[in-house]
Structure formats: C-alpha cells, structure tokens
Length: 385
Image 1: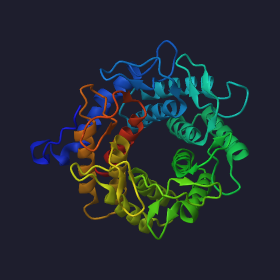
Image 2: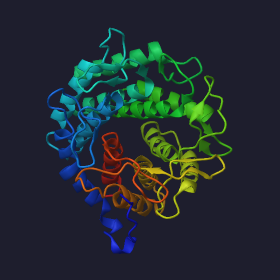
Image 3: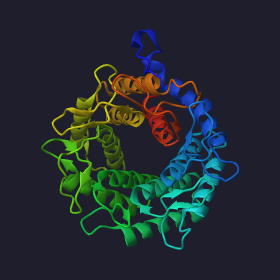
Image 4: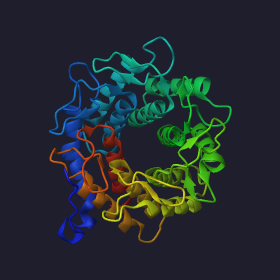
C-alpha cells in the first residue's frame, strides 16, 4: 500500500499527538499483541501478524522479539496503562526461561525457537541477551522479585564469563563471529541503564560507563561525528563506513539516560549525533532513511519504522535537557510516525518499511516494532505532557 502523504495542515494537530498515540497503544496495540499476538497453544509471543491482523503461528520465534514483548507489557504495567500488563509479562518471561534458557544444557539463551517451542538455532547472540536483560530489568522494577534478580545476575555472569572481548565490549555471540557491530553494544548499554533504574545498584553505573567509554574510544568518530556500524575484532573500522541514522538518534536518547544516572555530561555528543542524523532525511516525508554514507549522503532510500521512533526519542531527550524547540520537533516526529507508519488498517498494527516512492516493502506486521513504538510513546508521556 502506498504511503499516503497528507499535508500536516489537513491532518490531526501535532500538539495532540502524544495523547492520540497513548490511546492507540492502550486501546489497540496492547490488546492486539497479547491476544492474537500470543500463542495460546504453544505459548510465547508470535513473531508477526499477517496483513489482515491474524497471527502467523508457523513463523519461527526470535528470542529478542520474545524479550521485547515482555518489556512492552512490563513497561505498560509500570506506567499504569494496562492492568493485565504485569501478568502478561510474567507469562512471557516464564515461557522464555523455560524454552530458551539453556535448553541444550549449555549456558545462555538460544537464538531462535520453532513455533512449537523447540530449538531452531542454538547460537548465543549478544543482541538477544541485551534484550533479555532489558526485559528482566523491567519486570524486576515492578515487584523487586528475588528470583528475577537472580536471573539478572545469572545472565550477567554468562556475559562476563563467555562473551567478554579482550578488545573491549562483548563478542557478537558464541561462537564468535565477524564483523563486530555497534548494535549489540548499544543495546547492552541500554540494558545496563535499565538495570540500574530497577535495582539502584551502583555496579550498573560502572557497567554502563564501560559502554560509554567504548563509544568514545571506538564507536564514535569525533571527526566525522557519526557512528559506524561494522568493525574488525579490534574495533578498527571496516570501509566503506555504513551509517544508520536511526542508531545515531538512538544514541542521543541513551546518552541522556546515562547522564541522568551518572551526572556525566553528554550534551556535546548528543548535539553532534542529532545534527548528523538529520542529514539523512527523506525530502518528501521528513522521515529518516535507512542508511547513509559518512559524507552525509543517503545510501539506502528505504525507510523503516524504527528510525522514526528513535528520532522522536532523540528530540524528547533534548527537550528533557532544556533545548529550545526540541519539544515541538519531538511532536512533529511522532506525528510523522503516526501518519506514515501507524495508519494501518489493522488497529494496533503498523507498516514496517517503505521504499523511496512510499510503497510498503513488508507485507506482514512484525512484532519487533512494538518495542520502538511503545518506548517512544512512554518517553513522550513522561517528558512532553
């Protein structure tokens, strides 16, 4: 379906967008993804819905998606948005721990399950573990349950014992592989901030600080003011450097979170990253493109949903820091997300990606996007309202 480009003046007001998106999440997204989006027979969340909103129950189950959905329902419960959220999150966590944690007798979480809960891919993936840690932290924040805290500690012990790299950060997984990506490091940074928020254990300030140090030393190029995606084992850059504008924006928000829990100033880097991200906007819609070059040119003109939620969060972070006009920019970004991606005929669904001409490139409704949508809306509710 084409991406309908309506003039802002003829559509709903940007000023009301946070309230509209909050209602959409509460009234449509949360009910959809715990009913049709939950497999009542085999257990666990489904990975995607068909275009008409019916569960694709035969699709394999990615572990990071299971963890993201747990996060969404725990976060909704934390916000007081969804009374059933805690129960759904706990049900999802029980399934995750039962089916994906060491089912083959080896430590760590497997990468993918079959639709009926068997092991499809037994690799241990650092990106997956980052989201399992985020899910555990968010669930722990609800009740401070000792068993959940023990799962957090066990996961950290696995990361430290099996995936730590002598060159800094964590390996891609077990078995180790190349290239190394900044993406797992970024989400482990996010998870450490979340665990600190949930536990108030100062050790997690230190752990988050290790990722900030990696960002400064290896991931961020202070000359070009962009973040690379792919690296050799020693964190040397792999040319040509790939830049994902959505990740530049995501780091803006994460750096604000790090500043909040540590007091370490991050304003310079946030400003540089945001300015760099904005170079990769689609002319017609104002949305972020999927990939660019280090020189600031758009390399891939397709545009996924998640970078739009991340640029909204970046502006929200800058609004929280007191930057003039950032709140208006955040609302405008949320309005673009609503107009182009959330205007799906399935209530609670979304379009995942468009091509340069506004044609939808993904027929299904992937569950993985809910994390991005919900996080943007909860941040907006807390800062902009």
